[in-house]
Length: 100
Image (cartoon, rainbow, N blue to C red; front, side, top):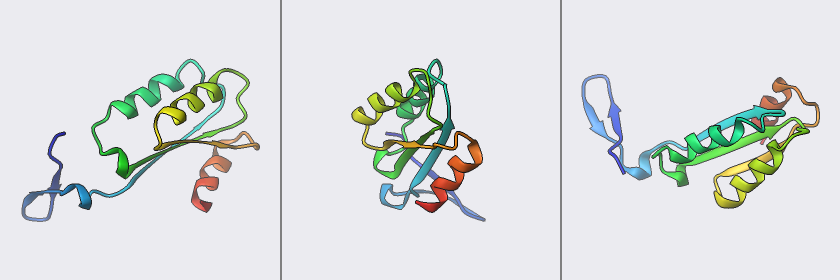
């Protein structure tokens, strides 16, 4: 795993792994079956510590293979979760996250 740099106003130091912030990635989507796997692959390939990462895929009741793909990733990677957005619009998906 690479080093994590931290820049302060007048110096550069290193983050310890325990000091790294928790990062949440929110992916509102609907019928993205052809692309969601590539998106999640790029996140999984990132070297940010997975115990400091959460991926929330908020699906607008997709009618293609999006949900099945995300469920497969969620099964394999504990930091990926599938949430339902029955209203099917992005602002609702983002507001759902702020309420969690």
